Length: 338
Image (cartoon, rainbow, N blue to C red; front, top):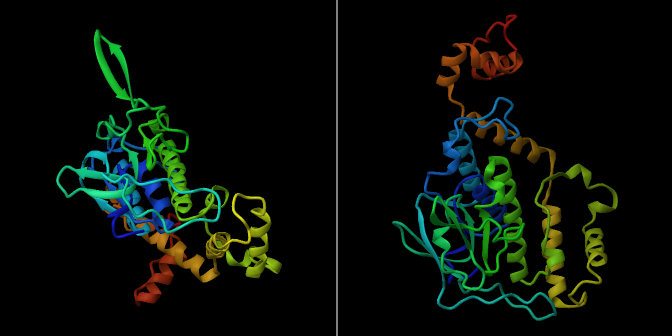
């Protein structure tokens, strides 16, 4: 976006919801900062057993490290600071036009000023609230719709952030403010991550709308596919152009306009970029396994299961191949190895 903005998106909270939202936004090219005070509610868990992909469960510390590393690899800046307040910028940004042929560059004026506890204030177009605590740092952003609910408990009046303040996709009555947490989804790490992903996709779509896309075109899919699936007519870019024209012929934008052509070009680029060849697929798989291996704690495994535990968990042929590449003596296979 513009140099007038420090960041396109600021995510407050580095737990499952915040990291999921940040990854989706950063992978689409948005400049994202994640403020993580390092005291996520996830840290209160002794062990997570319901998070898919970890058959024996995963300790909270390792999962937090993996999520933070994933956010950084996606392009996010992770800032170890607590956010004290989020306030409207003096020159409040405007809404994008979602119809017609008139469009300009994405709005370059900030919507919010995010003030951390120790660092300098940061201006941003969008804020994702993803902290499970009370949301006090958002107070004052909305005078028309109550963010907080009041109830009596033990003869005393208490005030808490209203978990129903935001819509299902995280959008709120305040343009540019999204809430991934607190919400009813943050009771479990996996549901919190799902909520964050949904919010992240909404942030991406809204950023595209600011840049001239219309809603039906802006809500894309972020996943990788095998290039081998691009067979027949779909290997031709012009086929994708024809498909886009047919999909959006009755949309809010004139198909003969400059705006339509610009968005079509970007959308088709995104669709084709989602396909990777076999070499890229293998490289990404290897990088994924390496990232997991780097988070292993050999001492903990050895203490619990013995000195041969790590070798027993690796296929004998893989060990032999590695030993051969390194010029080492390959270990002899026995009945206990796998």
